[in-house]
Amino acid sequence: MMSQPLAERLRPKTLDDYIGQKHLVGQGAVLRKMIDAGRVPSFILWGPPGVGKTTLAQIIANKLDAPFYTLSAISSGVKDVRDVIEKAKSNHFFNTVSPILFIDEIHRFSKSQQDSLLNAVETGVVTLIGATTENPSFEVIRPLLSRCQVYVLKSLDKEDLLTLLRKAIAEDVILKEKNIKLTESDAMLRYSGGDARKLLNILELVVAAEEVGDIEITDAKVVERLQENPAAYDKGGEMHYDIISAFIKSIRGSDPDGAIYWLARMVAGGEDPEFIARRLVISASEDIGLANPNALLLANACFDSLKKIGWPEGRIILAETTVYLACSPKSNSAYKAINDALELVNRTGNLPVPLHLRNAPTRLMAELDYGKEYKYAHDYENHFVRQEYLPKEILNERLWKGQENPAERKLVDQMRHLWGERF
Image (tube, rainbow, N blue to C red; front, top):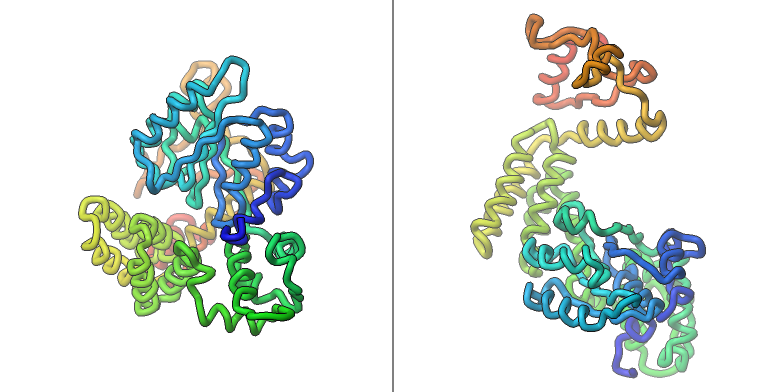
């Protein structure tokens, strides 16, 4: 017990001790209701590191009194998956709760590994709980995703983190024997970034640096200890999110030197190359967009080439794409347009499609004027004719607004030529 890290010693055993994620496991919340009822479906927990994904899975298994199996996507192959499923079958008796199979970092599972889970999940041999820091829509195969609920876990807020700090100081078997005074906490909270495990690692580091006597925790002391030993709160590459953030912001800020430096940090730190490539694809569309549509083509080519070339030469492909994106003109007009459109949809609800834009595959629909008076653009000069494409309730809304760069100026000029004052 005494040799365990603080984060392990404080790992909660029940939902009442679990800190954070009230939207999922607070009284009356969706997941809490299912757990209390004794039946949970297969689901995937999506959220940043250190927010309690593994802990929540273990609590659920304890609450349901279900056999609990765990696999790490980093170290497990298809054979390991099949072996666990066979063990689960032997532990699954009629009218009992299905064994729980917890897969950490499920986004790292290959397609064949995910395929090997399908039948066991579908037939109820196991209840799958997956944990991922990546968007499961992109990383989990559709047949498996369709059989799982997805629950989003949030970074812990300030009150959650302070509760955890106070609990550690007052209740941990080692720390409660010391006279610890938490005078300031801002630095600890800032460096933790909403990650409970990182927060407890920092606390443990600061306390361990004190030889004897009373221990007062101040912001200055925390900063000093972390500067002396920055890896202490970054075990296993937990700065991964800070560095990818700096990388993307350097590209967005058109600084190729900054971008290539943060790329080198990730390469040297053993970051997954495909993780970097995915972020480049996102940056190409979010930050460069219509100012240079070739950026998205190059980013996609980078992603595909990495799969063919592999490592270490793949670093050159990443570097080429990084520099190109950083040096490209920038526009977020498409990003803003889809966000504004989604906000409009949320505000106005499901407005009816105008009759002239509706599909009319049956005679009845045609008789109801579906598609009537629709003007086929290719029948007109320059393949354009003015007609309305928005519901009448929002005809005057403007969603895409071209920005000031050569590529988009051409698009705006074309729209003004066709639509006049609307653009």
